[in-house]
Length: 242
Ligand SMILES: Nc1ncnc2c1ncn2[C@@H]1O[C@H](COP(=O)(O)OP(=O)(O)OP(=O)(O)O)[C@@H](O)[C@H]1O
Image (tube, rainbow, N blue to C red; front, side, top):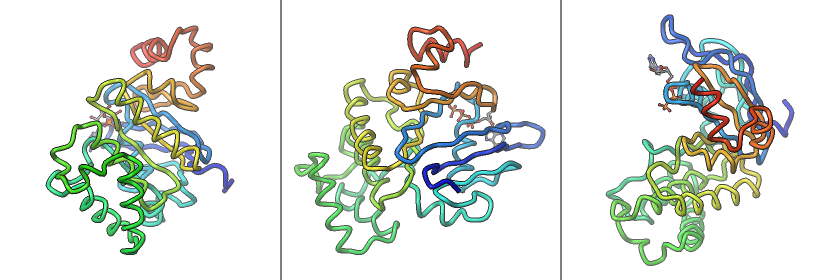
């Protein structure tokens, strides 16, 4: 595989009985790219992402993620990616430091490395004063930033973010995106779903899924030209909502 292409997907399909949730999608993602994966509710984003992270078997097609095949090497994929979603986050009843230690352990980091990572991460996020507080007591925006940083604790090649910023204000979302840029600048590939169209503008490239198919894929600038749209919200409305 081309080393610069960390995700390669060809004709990937998922059927539930007679229903085709993901219909022969094809795309590639470069190392260090921020790739936005958009679509209306039920378009098939989560189903596609589950196949890419190795927790759902495709019906047909091919995909290679972080150098590994999604049919045969799902365990290797899991070791080489990070994952964060609104539904899978931190433990509210553990402290900030305990959460970092717990997930560091799950990802197989040594005690020494976990300590180093915890100190660095707490400082980077400015969480010194709450390091020993329960995560459940933190504002949602802080939890999201911590959850994102924890998903990177094992230095994965790719991080998959499923609506990572749901429910917080635009300023907090903007701060979250600063963390995304930083990770991408350090070479981590970011695969992100979002319903916020301002966030779509922040991506290097964006794909838009409609009824299981990728109907458009390009940079935000080119998509706006292609659809004669002022912003990504207009592109999305023209395409995803018909
Ligand atoms: N296990 C399943 N069995 C049957 N149908 C499913 C299953 N999982 C998802 N679907 C269907 O597949 C379609 C795509 O769902 P999916 O959750 O991937 O969409 P999505 O784009 O992630 O939407 P959302 O933004 O609401 O999360 C939907 O019609 C959904 O009802």
